[in-house]
Figure 1 (tube, rainbow, N blue to C red):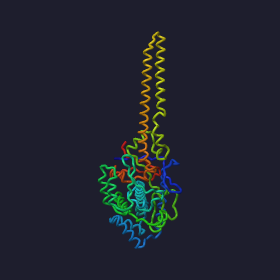
Figure 2: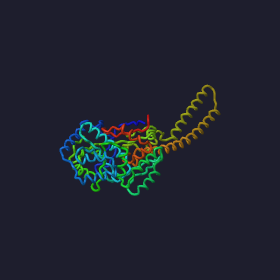
Figure 3: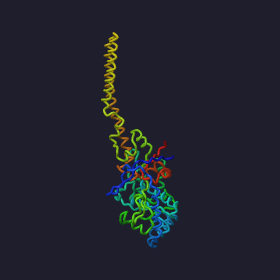
Figure 4: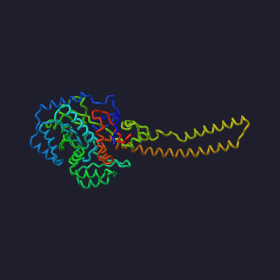
Length: 425
């Protein structure tokens, strides 16, 4: 199945105080990053290459030892050594710390990091490694820590494992997944990678689903917030870029890697697309909060159904009376027939008004339920979809090809929010 993508006139913004993300109308027409923005990464790489990076053997050994809990594959350890010995450059992909189930925003950042690393290698920057780093605490960036799947009735279930009894978690997950043709395969993959440490658990899943030669994992730091730890590790590992922290057009920040916006997207499944078409809505209207369910549910219905029926009744009665007067001018006076017709019309329209009112009420209720589900899919828990929905939801419904389809259609050098349609046209 080939997915479709549509770039929306929206962009992701951050609250100045909470650092939480929201979607807002784009204030300018241009959405693509200028090619000159990539010059900043090249300048940063030249600066870093003049600095003698090399971790002390004890710290390097500890990082490699913790990486072994994630994977013993040699390529991941070689990639980490490339960074700890200053022989390459890292594209940092921050992920949530202490929650195992990968979330959609983490996946989008990782896809963007892989693509940025590929572009920098093509520009002959040198060895570039995409480094997954659990470094964002729950509550930081206004992050709730939720990683959810959507049930068929529209209810959200948080499946984020935060440590503890992993067998009990797997049993819970097996009972929570909606149950599709891909559920058994997905549960088998998750069971194979399960670990009591949620960061190791998540890293194993990401390494399985994003198998790449130039990927590695940096163990989380227990103390300090993201910005503080980023500056600390920037002095120890040659970090050329950090995904999801800003735009490279703002220049090179002091003491930090060059920010890269990554990609922002909303997944629009087939039934959601059908609801959008039914109610004549555009995704950007919903995502930007410009339309509410209670107003959209009546958008295609008359405001006053009885008044519409009464108006039609008056028109019909008027036509019958005009007919009667025309016949009288011809000398024909069908008084009993006209009276009978008027009575039938009156009774018929009364029944029609009652029936139409009931149907309109039922239609409003049906629309309200469908709109509630649609809003729940597009803005689950009232937040951007990518900050709530787990990757497991989409792998369960669309199988392992979901990631390849996503990777094929996303535009990683575009700051506009992208709507990814999963249903074929």
